Length: 55
Image (tube, rainbow, N blue to C red):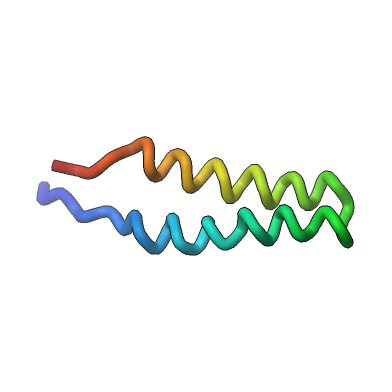
């Protein structure tokens, strides 16, 4: 079975945009919702970077 390349850059870019959105949401959204968006974005970015590359 051939290994498929992973799309790290789009995952980091899309979820990286959730980080400033989550921070900005603390001004107008419930803290639980804003915190959820912030944690979700950070979790995906950190886990994607921690996986490294498939070599």
